[in-house]
Every structure is written in C-alpha cells, then in structure tokens.
Length: 390
Length: 182
Image (tube, rainbow over all chains, first blue to last red; front, side, top):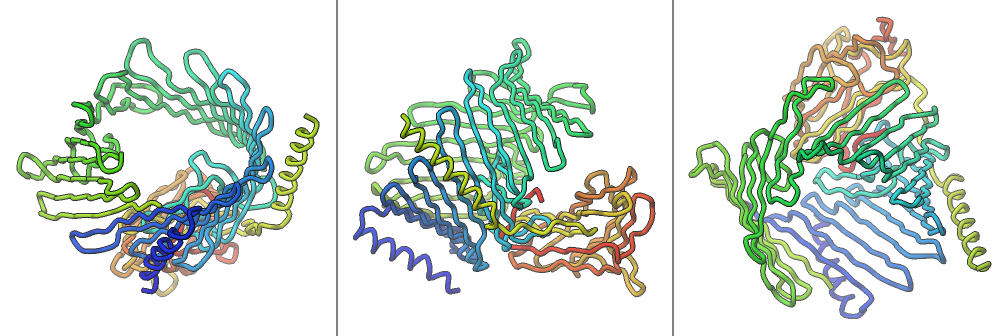
C-alpha cells in the first residue's frame, strides 16, 4: 500500500521544484473512475530537465496495480554523434526491465546508427527467458528518385519494423526500437532493404535477410496496384524462404474524395481464385459546419469494423456527433456524443451511449470527462481525467 | 574542410569504439539450447483478456517431435499441466506447425489441462507445437507445473523419446512480458 503515497510525493516535488526552477518542464495526467466505483484508472508524471544540449526526462506510470513503470530518457549530442538513451524499471518487481542506447551520426550521403539494448530477467514471455542483450548497426542512404536503402546488421539484436514492445498485465506498454533477442555478441542477422522502387504501375519494396545459417528469406512487396478504373487497390507481397514461398494479397477500397468508406475483402475458396467481394462494413463521415462533424457506421459482418468505431459485444452500428469550439486561453474544447445499436431489444435498438468532453480550464490545465451508459443492463461508468503541464 | 573530415573520421572512430565496447562483454548472452528441451512458455496476456502459453521444442532428436502427450498415466494417475485456476482459465488448445490436437481435457476447477498433439506429416526439431489459450483472471504470478512421468514424447520414427534424453522447462505468469520471437 506504500505506493499510494508516491504520486502525492511526486506531485509535491513537482510543485516545489517548478516554483524555483524554470528549466524544469513537466506534465501530470490522471484518469479516475467515479462510477461505478471510485478508483484510480491510471496516472502519469513526466518531469523533464534540460541542460546544455541534453534533456533528461523521467516518466512514472501508476495503475491500481501500483507503480508500473519508471522510465528515464536521455537525449543529446557529443560533437557530431547524437545520443539517445532509455532506461526502464518495473517498480512492481523492484527490478530493471530494459535499457537502450542509440548512437547516430549523419554522414554526407548516409546516416549511421548503432543500437544496443539489454532486457532484464524480470521480463518474461520469450523462450527460456533470462537476461539478454545485443547490438545492431544500421546504415541508411538515399539513392535518389525517392529510393532509400537500409542495411541492418545484428549482433544478438534486431530492429523490428513495429518496434519492440514490453507489456504489463494492466494493458500498459512501452515500445522501443531494439529487440535484444536472441542475445549474443556474435553475428545473428543481416538485412538489406530497398524502399520506394518504381516497378510497372506500383511501388516496390525489397528486403533480403540472412541469418547465421545463411539466406533466411527474400521479400518483394508491391503497394497500391490498381485495376483500370475500379475503386479497389491491392497490396501484394511475396516471400521466398529456403524451402517455402508465401504470397499475401490485401485489397483496399478507395473511392477517392467521397465521404463514405467501405470495409471489405475478396472472397476466396483457396488458392488464387476469387469468387466475389465481401462488403463487411460501411462508414460515413462529413463536416456539417465549422467544428461540427457527423460520423456513422454499420457492420454487416463481424470483425470488419475499424477499432475507432468503438463497437462492443454484439453492437453493429453507431452514430457520432463531434463538436468543438473556442475554450480558455486560445485552446479548443471538444465533445463527442455517440450512440450504439445492437439486437438485444433496447428502445430503438439502442444499446449504449457515450459522451466524451475535453475542456481547457487554464493554459496549463485541461479537464476531461467520459460517461457511458448501457441501456440493456442500466450500468454506467463515469471517468474524470486531467492534464496539468508546466 | 580537412578539419571537418577529420572530425567526422574521429566521430566514426568513436562510434566504432562504442560498438566494440558494447560487443566486448557488456552483455551476458543466454546459453544456447543444445539439449533436447520441451518448453512450456510463460503465460502472456493482460488481466481480463485473452492470453496464451506456447508449447515448443528445441533440439529434438530422432528427426524431431511428432507426438506429444501431456497428462499421460504415470503408474498411479493421469496428471497434466497444472496452473493456478484463480488466475488462469483455459478455453482451448490449438495445434501449430502441422500439429493436430486429438484430445483435450480441461479442468478449470482444479487447474489442470491434458492434451494429445500429433503431426502426421513429420517431426519438428525446433519450433512451436501448440498454444494453450485462455483468459487471465488476475495479476498474481504463479508457476506452471508438470511431471516428466506424465509426459510422452514420440519422435518422427514413431519411437518414444526416453525421459533421460530431454529436459522440461515450465514458465510463469510474469507481470511484465514480451510477445513473439525467441
């Protein structure tokens, strides 16, 4: 229970320091549940300190589980070498979780970066676990005509396209550039990529990957292949391994500047034959006036609706009105009113409505409210949050 | 210009030196898996949501693993992989890499799962055999447990792999975790 006093101590520290030192910057965000029960959802403290060409930032995150993350970030330059460092601790297990250092240098025709990272043994989820670390060298160069070449050589580490994410069971996560697995001082992977090549009527990205055992795979990715005047485009990628080949075809509907979107897919029966087109969801969005927007969407088949619609359970349709206007100190207030529909027999088919408001109170203080009401069960939730910057 | 080029060379040298220092023993690489191992990974997933435990093998002999029984008869009882039922609720077991799940027994009251996985196409030396999926009920860390006597491993030749020829590694349910990869 001792951790519950920590946010208060940090806030008092921030207030005390901010009065004395102008080189400190900070931000305090909080999200508190009022209904159905009073509880802390999450709170975060960010404290930055700038000296010379260096910036040190401390970020502390809390949830009802306790003090989840303590992160320190360092950014600056030593001559022509730019340096970024990250250090992550898990106070819940009182242990080091992750560290990363990136050294970068701008050469005349290219950019050279070195990545080094360590993963602590309190982070689980990978085979056999244990502390592990590695380094990677990245050389990027622009070849002209929009073509970029990137070469990565890993010594126990790699640089995943989507980054390397450490999760906490509360749902919070931190993402960094370097994946220090499998961990080693020796060569583990080499990648050469070419982006933005022009090939026939599409753009082509090429990637070839070698591991310690030799060639791992080569991949060709074609983007935005169009078919005559049809409002459909395809992304095609072909991956060639040592003893396999994989082809992936992704289709997208593109109606240009019109205000509706269709979410669908091609209907396959296996192999390369296409039997038809599945229309899975339909959405519309338009500006009614300055700072007034209307959105609506209907899902015909599950799993087609985009996440931003916010559908839950058996809900298949939503209508949303977004309003904004001038608030305090040159900022804008925003308000979203949304109703959802399902087939459980609520009045007019309504299942839930939500209201989200963000209101700037002063130049450095913004309050937010989030209210949800489930019609079928009568349950409601109310969250209040704020952001305080200095 | 000469001074600038010299400065750049110096910076590049410093960069290479930093890399050298990084490679020269700052890191403690994990020991490579050289012994045949059956691995039950850590349970990964957020509280109140779906999560999974991967069952995988490394350095399997005899052309690789082609059959796996978790919860075999040990002379006195059938007992599979055990877990804390207050923290984890299993909903199913799915085969991976060509493995098919022939039978499953799940007891979320006592916290036990048994299953039989086979790959009719051949053996797997390295890789994932199956994943045990379910819901994370709480945030308390716990150990998965399974006795070697309750496991049966069959290689690609149809021969039983003696329990002296492999080791078993079982995971936990850590509060911090990563997904995917090795």
